[in-house]
Image (cartoon, rainbow, N blue to C red; front, side, top):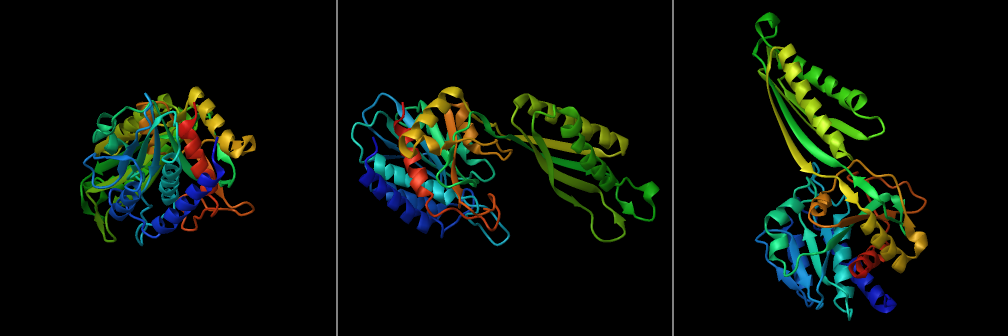
Amino acid sequence: MIEKERMQAAIEAAEKHWKYLHTIPEMAFEEHKTTEYIRKVCEEYPVKIIDLGMKTGLVCWLDAGSSKTVALRADIDAVPTADGPHHFCGHDSHSSALLGAMDYLCGTEDLPYNLLFIFQPAEEGTRGARAMLDHGLLEKVPQRPVRIFGIHNRPEVDFGKVVVHRGPLMSEKSIFRMTFEGVAGHGSLPHKCVDPIVAAAAFINGIQTISSRNIDPFDPVICTVNSVNAGAPDIAVTADARVTGYFRSFSHEAHKRMGQRLRRLAESTAEAYECRFDLNVTHAVPAVFNGDEMHALASKAVASVLGENAVTDSDPCLASEDFAVYGEEMPAFLYWVGSGVPGEACPPWHDPGFHMDPRYMQSAVPVLCASAMVG
């Protein structure tokens, strides 16, 4: 049972943290002020701070005398933009909600589980979760968690609703970097050059057929080119052309097929246009997948604090989230907590107009608390 007065105090604490953290957005792995603020807040509670040897991010453990531990995760970094970092994805709200949940849970007697609070750096770029695991997160904590919950705001979902989705929620992602190497020369002598820009253009057009012709149309995928760099505004034919992008899918089998086709198209295009090529593909994150057992626990948790009418569902999203990395280590569940202002068309994540319903903590904090105790 949730104690209403203590929960209200925890929500107000979270709102205070949110108001401050929103003013100090910091880039991935550069969240020094954010980390220091979170550390000072955590030191006010009876938790053990775990030293992972990382410059940013923080992990702490609450010993409730249980034989099992449940983890709660929030991300802390901001979105990079041309004029510096901004909280255009709402990670400040996630870390504030987790601090609010800590306030409530540390004052709760007879907790059924010990708790691990994870304030993760560098979700943008999907590198922070792996970094924490590589720094010994699961080896340095007093007890390995049996499961983990996380939250992310969702502007397309109205405040007061929580998406509790079963199955794939966010996509598996791989990043590619492609270079075509030609022969530079004078633009008036094309027969004595090998133009890599022509090869790059053919490659860019060709990879669009991966999703349209190589993958089941009922299996959503995306293959995106996000940068092209070649040449200069003069008469010369350049020596190389560089293309970067990514591909995403919910299905791992589709992901493997996309990687195979990307490489084959790179090879055949380079051969056809008499270029050399170098293709580097880096697997970034798996898909976020909410399994059946965790879905049942999550549904129960949300209904217990916000009511059954708050539990909703939506289509998954082909964006990626490195919360998925934890799911390779233990049962995991990611909620989308509605942050949209009812009656408004709220801009999506990373949009400069991004904003959240100011009542967000009234949903986010109770959901985290209930998830920590559900069983």
